[in-house]
Figure 1: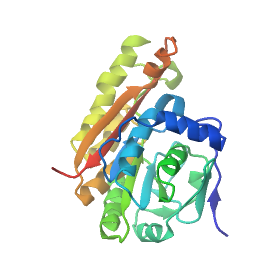
Figure 2 (figure 1 turned 60 degrees about the vertical axis):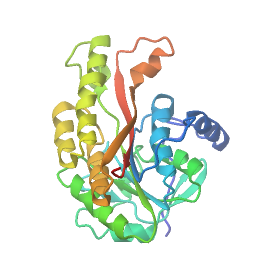
Figure 3 (figure 1 turned 180 degrees about the vertical axis):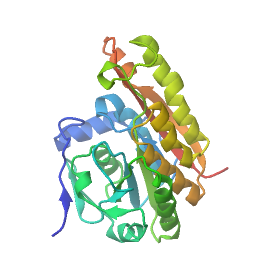
Length: 287
């Protein structure tokens, strides 16, 4: 039976209706196309908070004109695999179905650290929230969704996927999905105080530690960094994306935007006590 993953977070993280989804995406897209590259880092919060940032990263990959996008997702729930592959069928969104590229997925499933496991994807939002934007920008693109928990094999997963992409007859791009520091009382994380000062530290210091490792292409270091400093929920996805980029030779990372939910909330004249960091950037080939 053909597996179809129905949307689980439509109406929560982003609009459930197709028309309103399209209108919102059109508003989220950057006025100018960012540099085109075969991989990007994107956030996965609700679109009202991180949608503009995510749209930047997805636009950069879209400008590279891939046939297939491997989407490495964070694992917020229980996933005991080193990486969990959704290897066939389709994912349904308000904009229709986006097909899984079963040929590329089959090649990726040969990795010793990748397990075919559809179940872990049904309650996870980190890949789902990217898909309507991907569909809007690239209606014909196919996907390979892979959940990558922050474990010791995350970079090896990405390296294998990059090798497959390099040898593939189709253009394969990568997205790595993570949010950054979750700061404030609702997250039980306030090592630098309550309110404005702590939120500023989270963005300007703690987030930047993690982003700095992306910029230095230190794929093997990001999982330990996030475990120690609590500055990324999708460190496994980031490590996999970085290692795939290194395998493809695209080691230059250009940051497109770094923001946080507190900055967005202040636009609504609210004084937030909690904040989550968001990063978008694109990997480019050396000049």
